[in-house]
Image (cartoon, rainbow, N blue to C red; front, side, top):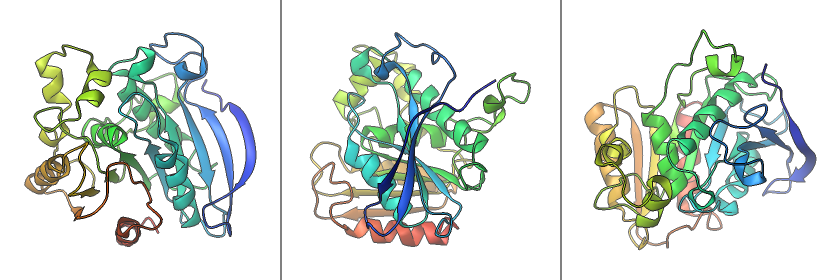
Amino acid sequence: MFRLLLFCAVVCFTQTGSVLSQEKVVRLWDGDAPGALGKQEEDTPTLTLYLPERAQASGAGMVICPGGGYGHLAQHEGKGYAEWLASNGVAGLVLKYRLGTHGYRHPVMWQDVSRAMRVARHHAKEWGIDSEHIGVMGSSAGGHLASTIVTHFDAGDPASSDPVERHSSRPALGILCYPVVSLGAFTHQGSKKNLLGEKPDPSLVWSLSNELQVSPNTPPCFVWHTWEDKAVPVENSLQFADGLRKAGVPFDLHVYQNGRHGIGLANGHAWTKDCLFWLKENGFL
């Protein structure tokens, strides 16, 4: 039986300072995670919860995949996003997934985000979240992981002895921030190497070039990039949006002229306002 394990429980201020959220760290598996190479912190995937006050909560939640080239996890694309979401009524659930720099390769990262979606659904009522309103959000390589789960999900295993595994891993929607999507010509080579190793199987490269894996069952997505991005070409977002269009999946695509790679919230960049508007249109606010 899966048990909720808390490493810590602290009260912290969100970005606005006017709303309090509960920050809790929750293990995704009771015991060692599948494929764990050790028992250290880097071998233990977790969710860190930033829950808005119940009076302000919209009932929606977002699993957040920080960027970092599958080599590290960028805090401003994790905690920073979670506090921003919580200040707007959406529970932010920051995923600490396993990394290539610690010896992990696909499918471990996909297993971690899939499990995170199931854990969020399993504890939705406890955390004040509607299980039908849990999305995924990711930046850069975290955007690749988010684009992977919106195109590679399943309905869960109703026969599993683990009640968490009975839940669907499909996000209700996706938010992709300057994402790595393709592992082809426009990929970020460092992310690809950390995810798949030096000489990946071409069939694996194809299956994780997620612009090619969009289906009519892919959830609606908000996708944004900047024209100035020198690290991850804007074609990643353009090609993913084209895949969504061809599959008949609703999306918002925004390409902003200015902004380096990895800007995050950027002190209230226009994307944050556009994203909140889109979340409201999709029943998350």
